[in-house]
Length: 181
Image 1 (cartoon, one colour):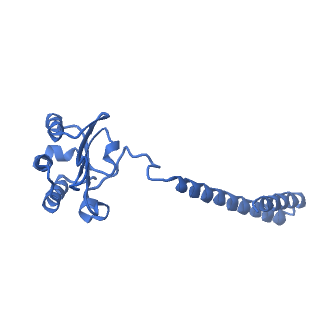
Image 2 (cartoon, helix red, strand yellow):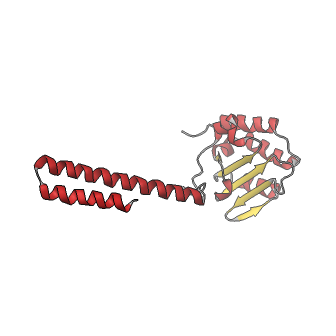
Image 3 (tube, rainbow, N blue to C red):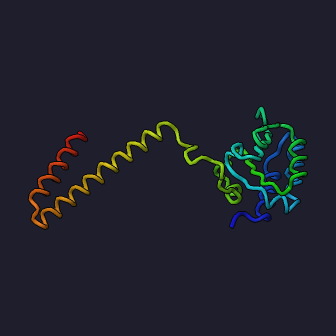
């Protein structure tokens, strides 16, 4: 389904009314985009836009060293005019935009227009300790799954009177439980 052009327009309007920037070119660029449906159709608001082939990352933080960045095919510029000209000349190309402002991660207005970033690796937000915890979780899940499978095999051996199978599966269960301690 996606986000409608009207939703995007209303969000940009809200953003411009709520957050002020020292760089008037950034405001002009957003106003230009806001007034053109053909551009709005190809714009997607995402997190981590710098990972996309053509994107804008813009911040309302007045102390930011680079409040505006335009990415295109591994080239980055902080020149709003260059970005404007490229957007104007290539209105049918997909453009990903990330706006960084106070509380953007908890903003309902931003959440309404946010879309999944198709260029974001699945493990992008995982830290090293996350991998350790994930490995521990998987190891425990595997261990308890093996225990349950062996218990089922023991029960089946008992049900059919398979003494040899009962001893085999019981020994495996004991060995597994001893090895985990």
